[in-house]
Length: 237
Image 1 (cartoon, rainbow, N blue to C red):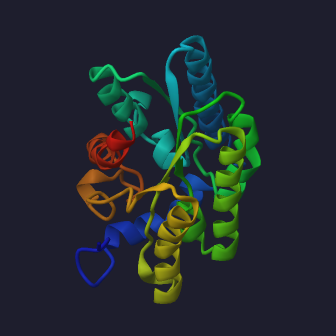
Image 2: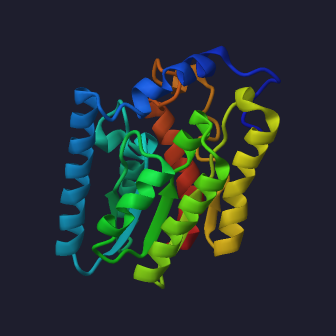
């Protein structure tokens, strides 16, 4: 599977990468902090709804701004679109979106215990993209993702873990890029998790399917992401 359609990285995507710190990593920015607070509040409401609907099993989407739906309406983000598919089929599941813009694997590791206060049946883990785009040590990324999955297993031994694979452009070097891509399959195999090979298949690097930052999907992009997730998730359900 190839992320890039040509041997060169799309200029629009590289331009988006230059904006990444401002978009995904600006925890001190008041606007971003407000957005994150709203995302957490949404997740809390969904957890409360899931608790009240005690007969339904919970599918928890745990990730960064891609999961949170940065730049689009909450009901346009791919977890909500997956939830609509589930509702249309009258499956006994409810979707909770626990995405948080700017989240790294280290941040995900630090809040996982709090998020898992309620039981989950399916845990969709979408983290690591910020680590790779910032060039963080992949040993740390691998260790943090493993710790998150270990916590899920401890608190929900019967839960199915779905790991969303990510890829990054080659501007950090081919070795780093390859190791980053491969670590998701390695972790999925090690933990007997279900793998989404590449979450942004058909969307990453396609200007018309991304916001002007070149990173985050448009509503049309989220529809494609939802289909990618659904192809893997539906057999699990």
